[in-house]
Amino acid sequence: KHVFLDLKLHDIPNTVGEGLCSLMGIGADIVNVHAGGGYTMMRRAGEMVRAEAKKRGIKPPKIIAVTVLTSINEEDWQGLGQTVPIRSAVLRFAKLTQKAGLDGVVASPQEASLIREACGEDFLIITPGVRPAGSSADDQSRIATPARALQAGASQLVIGRPIRCAADPQVAAEAILKEMETCK
Image (cartoon, rainbow, N blue to C red; front, side):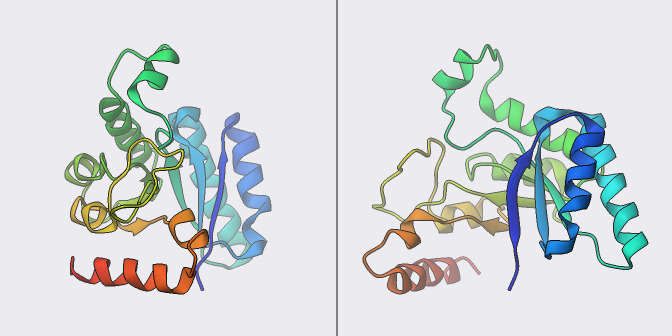
C-alpha cells in the first residue's frame, strides 16, 4: 500500500521543512508542498527531509509541489491578479520545482505533456482532475479522462469522487483500470 499525504504545505522555508520532518514517521511515500512557496522553500524542505531521513536511517518520502490547483480556471486565475496563462505558470512552477531538487509536481492532465517535455521522464507528474468519460467535473476545471492523462505523460492519477461516490465503487474502479490498460 502506498500513501500520498496531500497536505499542500505552504509557509516559510523552515516551517515547511520542520512540518515535513515531523510527518516522516507516519509512513507516507509522497508528501507535497505548494510551489508558490518559492524556490528557497522547496529547496530547504527537500534538504531537511533528506537529512532527517538519513538521521533516522529510513528512505525519504518523495516530495512534490502543487503547481496550480485543478479547480482554478483562467477566469479565477486572472481574478487572482495573474497575467500569464495557467499553462505558462504551471510550466514555470514545474521547472522551478525541478531546479529546487524535488521529485515532481501535482498538475492538471492538461499541462502534463508540457511538463513531461520540459522536465523529462524521471520527473513525477501526479494529475488530479481525472474523470472517466461522462463523469461530472464536480469542482474541477482542468480535467481529462484517465487515458488522456496517461497519454499526456502523467506518472500517477488522482481519481477520487468518480470512484468514491459511484453506486458501486469497485465496478467504477475496475472500469477506470480497464481504460488505463488501453494506454500501455
